[in-house]
Image 1 (tube, rainbow, N blue to C red):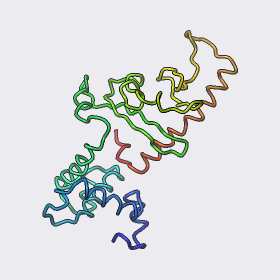
Image 2: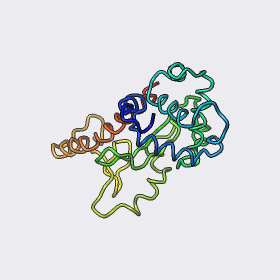
Image 3: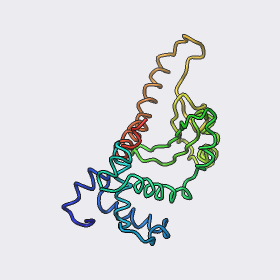
Image 4: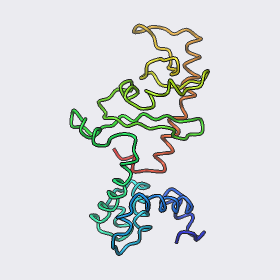
Length: 216
C-alpha cells in the first residue's frame, strides 16, 4: 500500500499524514524498536504502525481501532503500548516522575509549550497538574536555560500565569481588585493576546491531527 498514490487520501484522512511521512516513521521506529521489529508476528511492522496512528487519529479508543482492523482489543492495547514505551528514552521529561506526583490521585497534567510564529512546537515540558505555570517554568530545562540563549531584543510571550522577566513578556494586570488599566496598557494587552493566539492555534491543529487528545 505505501507508495501507491491511490491510497494518499486514505493515509491523510485516517492516519493524519502522507505516505512519505509514514515511511519516515517506519524507519525511525524500526531503529527504536529493534527487538519488537524482529519479533515473530502474523502482522507486518508497517501494519502495527498503522494501528498506532489510526488510534491516535480517532476518538473511538481501542474498541474502534480493533474493530477497524479486525484485531482483538488486547492485541491493539499491547501493540500501541509497545510503540509508546519505545519513545520514553527520547523524552526530555521523566514519565515516572510525572505519574508518581499526582498528589490528589487525579491524573491531570500541566503542559508547557513553546510555539513559534509558524505554529511549530519548539519545546514541550509536561508536569503533574499540581504544578503551577510558574513552577513548571522554573523546573523546565527551557526556563532554566533560555536566559543564556535568548538574543538581545527578543522575547518570549507568556500569559498571566508566568512571572514577568527581562526575556519573558507577560500582560499588564491590575494591582488591586477592580483596578483599571490605562489605555496604553489595554492596547498592549490586546496586541499581546493577539500574538499569543498562535499557541491556541497550534494546540488546535495538534488535536485535529491526534484526535485522541480530545478525549476527557
